[in-house]
Length: 318
Image (cartoon, rainbow, N blue to C red; front, side, top):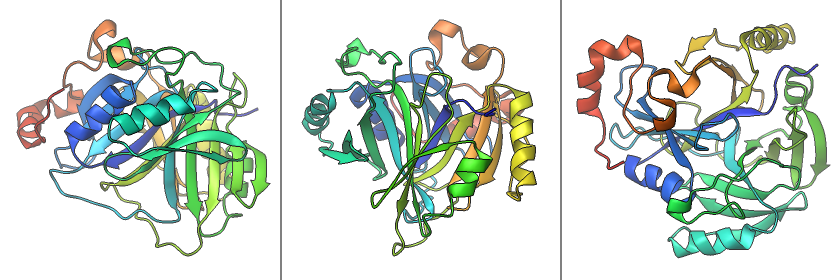
């Protein structure tokens, strides 16, 4: 029995906070789900969450905008490469037109026989909107930004990971994470994430043997981790033990992210994975459920540093 069901969220490190917020909300039509700060270390950096109006798991993209501290990474191989979200079948042309019309260069491409729209975040991280025929979730409707149910993003499709060795991820994804290999071609490998709603979530593995090694730190311009949803603590701890038993011993202890609990594991292909589950109350722990993502909130353990952190954050108009 699989201990994960779909994605929980995807996290990347970006550049300017304003361009990041505008990109995900005004251009892609996602909602602000939470505005808080980086919980690790001492650098004042926003942690922004975007997704469906209610912040449903598997819709969440989170970002750390690193322009003010000026910490930047290097995109390369042995690193997560592309952020992917699902869109309704037949809506690729709409998104090509919308993105280009808003100054985001976008083109229609195909991989594994699936139509997708390729473009980039303003900081350069590649993104794709994928016409996923297996995704039965409703679209995120944001009429204020002109995005309707016919075209709206459904949530996370997955991510593409660039690797030196295309076979390096087989045991980790297949045996470790109970994913099924759906495709193996010169375009790469495709694994489906276990999902109670069917094979609508994907990890793609792309062979890039000649590129530079990508950085793994929290640093602007790079994807930091891919979070899979264990649903509860019992599954999380069982999966942690399972991975360690297979020899994937680079698994962190559980970390408290306030809204969810997380463990992190570095995969053989370099990409960092997280296994996470949402705590009771979720996003409404520190904001009313109908007002999530509207205020800047801090975890209880940062209460004594609140003013210091606010003073160090990059100005933004949310």
